Amino acid sequence: MSDTKYILGSFADPDEMMHGIEKLQENNISIYDCYTPMPIHGIEAKLGVKPSRLPIAAFCAGATGTILGFSLLFYTTAYDWPMNVGGKPSLPLPNFVPVTFEVTILLCALGMVATFFFRNHLFPGRAPRVMDLRASDDRFIIAIDAKENTDHALIDGLLKDAGAVEVKYNERKYVSYE
Image 1 (cartoon, rainbow, N blue to C red):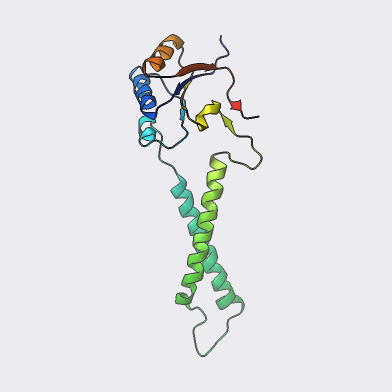
Image 2 (cartoon, one colour):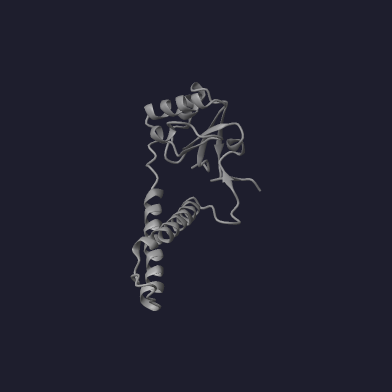
């Protein structure tokens, strides 16, 4: 069995890459991933990428911020050190709104950043890894799992017919910048 793990089709134009995706999907060839130097409208739908769950994490972090902000204000003004100033209530809810809102926004933003970094494995000190070094420069790359799709000649022909500038057989999982 070959050591080839990925077949990489390199395209110079995003429209040709989209055409290559269509050709591969017409022949029931599963695509591992696509790497592009810029966002391409509609590629997520074409590849069947599920919508992000980042809004759920944002809601959870925001709800935590709301609860923490309100709890802190309640504890300090009504429970731990209640003060009767001019006959005003010790639990003035309208006065809690600005601080609670700001803590909600703060924890929501920090929670989304932390979730994004955790989910995408963007930890400090981690070396960036890409399939092809030119994918972040000027090439549009389609990566196909070679172990799952065994007809390499058909894949090679489909990629070249779609306008691939180069078809490479990657023998390692990733090519590192180092």
